[in-house]
Length: 360
Image 1 (spheres, rainbow, N blue to C red):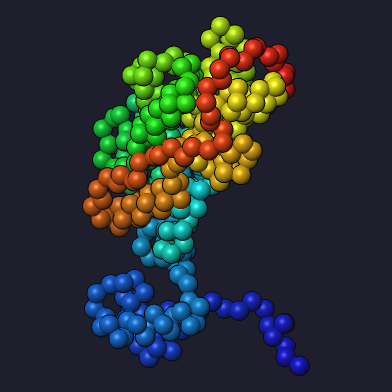
Image 2: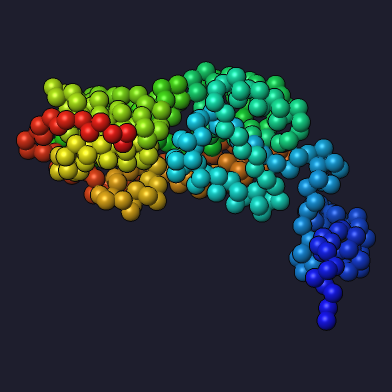
């Protein structure tokens, strides 16, 4: 009987092991595995094949010590952890990032912080401890101070969107405006003349962009367009919906939201108040998460490819860390996906209903 079960954990193969089996020097193996010039095609293929057969993977600690790099990228989110966990955008975006990092033998360091002061300190610690080589700057804000801070810390970065302050970092962006305009036009074509928009945090550039696009589109079509600020959370999406539906004099027949999470909370509030979606109230979201397709009624939403956004941002940041010149990346623009939650405007404006008093 074999004693393998008592032999302890199997030792991971090293570059020396690969070199011995491939019949070449350690230096040649290092050049091949790091895709450096000086190795002929046949030898490189033999080394890579041998490494794969042996299950060789890079030792990030050794690589970090020898190259003065961490082989990790970071993202710090100044959002409530419940919002990060509940908003489908972030898991999809991170999945796209991880897809690229796993192939590159790197890792993502993710942190959620409560305010700007803690966020700034998090960036300083990441740089001081050399825990990451670069960072993703998400949720760009008006006059965003993180741009100058991260640059002063010597970190590479990619911004998700175009900042409104000078930046030397490449931007990976999606044009939101077309999707918002298409949503307003869709609702106007359905006969709606009293619209509302539940926006995201007013200090975030993408929330402002969507709000501005909504207001301009409503003005161009000569319809009423009211805006209520929220924070992208289901809780505030529900509260904003209650406030809009309680205003009997200016009650909208259609509400658009700056993300799907708030829109789904809005559907729940409306239904608890006895309203039918979309017969009495049309609702549209933003991000086109998987959940939007499967709830009832299915949610009309503006689609962006969050997974591809994450992958594109990771590729750009990896290239920047490798000292490659990276141009701004413009991804496919957002587009409206109409579903069951939007329909013709009610012929008779629904009467006011009492608030359900729940949390939504």
